[in-house]
Each structure stands twice: as C-alpha cells, then as structure tokens.
Image (cartoon, rainbow, N blue to C red; front, side, top):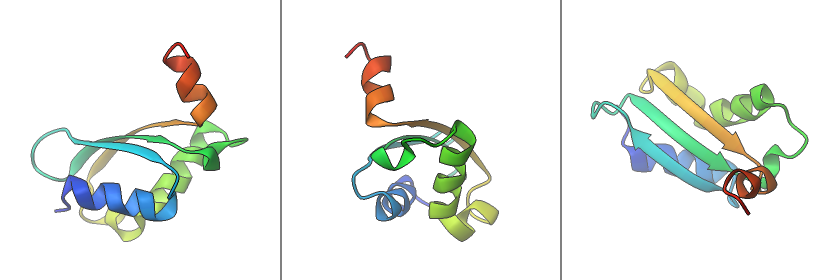
Length: 84
C-alpha cells in the first residue's frame, strides 16, 4: 500500500512545477485518482501524458497501486477548463 502523500510526492519529484491532487478512492491505499497539471505535458497526447505519469510512479504501478484514474492537463488547458 502507498499513502496518497507518497503518490503525490512521486509525481512532484518527476514534475516539480506540477499542481497535483491525489485522492484515495476506496480508502484502501491502492485505488487512486490523480489530477496533474504541468507544462511538461505541452505538445503531448493524453496517452503520452498518462505514460509520463505512469513512468514517474515507476514500480508503484506494478505493485502498491492497483488502479489509477488520471486527469492530465497543461496549465493552459486547465485554465481553459476552469473558465479562465
């Protein structure tokens, strides 16, 4: 099991500029939802963005994390989504 704070820290380690929100969906510390907003996603497809996050989480994706629902955005797309 991996605490939400640990998932958050792993993502921030790979994307220091990111705005990251991690939610434990079941309370079991193995099913998460994460929203990641970073300039590192610029020019990348959603699949590529998700692959970057999976890579950042490394071995956690094949062990402690059973499921991860991702929402990824560039700062511009996040601002647009939120009416900015």
